[in-house]
Length: 75
Image (cartoon, rainbow, N blue to C red):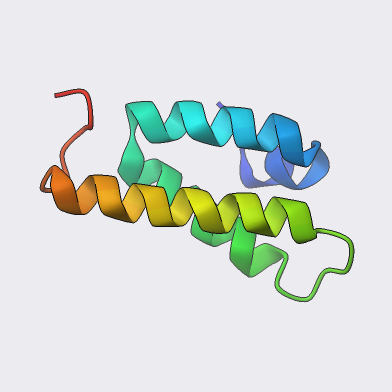
């Protein structure tokens, strides 16, 4: 599993792939990580793609959590 530092030091495409996997398996953790990425990159130049990815995952995680009562999406 990736840590925040891994996400910040990898490509946006690799981060997207990993976050999508996390979203499928644990939407709460995906939301937490996406929010952490957004917070860590809020003043960073050149991280627009990573921020867009994190924002998209946060929206999807929020939707999944609300649709499944906060339970694992695969339950």
